[in-house]
Amino acid sequence: MRALLAAASPYRSGDALAGIAAASAEQRVAARIALADLPLGTFLVDLVVPYEADEITRLIVDGHDAEAFRGIARLTVGGFRDWLLDDVTDGAAIAAAAPGITPEMASAVSKLMRNQDLIAVARKIRVVTRFRNTLGLAGRLSTRLQPNHPTDDPAGIAASILDGLLMGSGDAVIGINPASDNVETIATLLRLLDEVRERCSIPTQSCVLSHVTTTLDLIRRDLPVDLCFQSIAGTEAANRGFGIDLALLAEAEAATLSLNRGTIGHNCMYFETGQGSCLSADAHHGVDQQSLEARAYAVARAFRPLLVNSVVGFIGPEYLFDGKQIMRAALEDHFCGKLLGLPMGLDICYTNHADADGNDMDAILTLAGVAGVNFIMGVPGADDVMLGYQSTSFHDALYLRDVLNLAPAPEFERWLADTGLLVEGRIVDDGASALGERVLALAGPHG
Image (cartoon, rainbow, N blue to C red; front, side, top):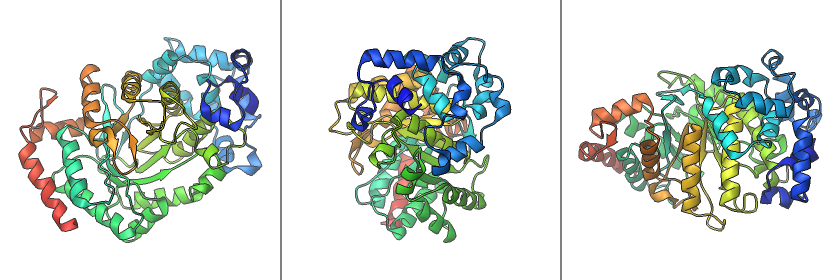
């Protein structure tokens, strides 16, 4: 099964680095023909990572919903593709089957699909989550406002937050990647985010993307934690490299829920993933990187997250070499996540040593919008000066909302209108001065 899935995968540098990619285009086509004839039920007994050696495999097998699977159990992988693409199969039918679909089934069917197939099926599926606002509704596109700063300077972070808010960004989350793992620094940033949100009455949620153990410590200290963040992967060994396991994630979810900070819902977990993470940790078990990425989604869906995003080009060209490979991975990740019932977003990005550029990201951004992605990143100037990579900007989100006639989350849209920043669906600067004074005034006490 490992060899078949790897050989059927579209070519990517990570699988070649692992020595498991198809040796030729002919071998790849032969693998896809064989995969298309494989019954879906095979994936429940022929496991790519041994049950006894991996808690993610045990999670997948023990949590499989046989009743949800019953409606598609008779299908082969090729038949599953046809069922997904059939006009009669709508989003509700796919959602009903989702608990019975394993990550390996999702990965397998994606390997038989063209890019347009991945878009067409993902577009059918809406996954709606709630904390202080409603994310994932049809006709909506949300953004994570990412105001990172190389020294965690509160004034610099506040300026970036203001920049994003003035351009309608931040309804998915205002989320900072801290440059430091110092608990006091992270506590300062949490207080800043919470004060900005409360003083400006913004219907959104905040997050400082620290390690889950740090977040647990902050919760015990009664800091204002909205969302609990963690990077996750598709094997037990790779997650161990992140310093986590399923028990720790369950503890973190329970602790975050205990704060009861959500006002309209209780989806309080935020997960990030990325193809290549298991290979980079030498924890891939000979499995192709896209199948392992799909297995990470099994981890995510066990904890009812508000947000999940694939940081699709962040790990580098060793795993996704160029813009074409990044594009394919983005569409695969979004499709597989939605198919498994997750509220998928994308960090459409690349590192500066990859064979990719802003035009590639524009194309991926547009395709992801057509596919119905829940959220994207909003980074000042699309250039993250702390993490050192290229992502999508506040302007990119405005472009996508404009050309596809999309709006922010409804509660956030009303706030933008009430603040004077949104008039007849377009961002204006009428409320900029007053909002700017409030946000920047809050930076001082935290400097």
